[in-house]
Image (cartoon, rainbow, N blue to C red; front, side, top):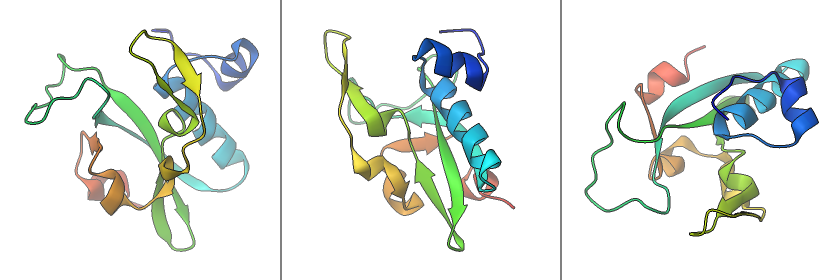
Length: 123
């Protein structure tokens, strides 16, 4: 899914990648009046090996959201929160509440934004 799709297209086709789900979620938040940001960076997937240094242009990127609720930023990864990919490449739907409204201090163990946290959560 290398093409940028609109939220309407994502809903119609029923599939996408992290940047698509991130865009759809951001659009829904804006419609609901919730402050939201899209965050780009890297994440420790199933093939991550300890000590690996992520490199832009070489490693696969990941995208997730930050929402401002109850006077604090919380993170949401709509992709990882809805399932996982098996080693065979098949996606398995399975709710994982850990990736919904996660504290930034917790998600930083698996998700690494391109910019410092302060850059991502500025007003």
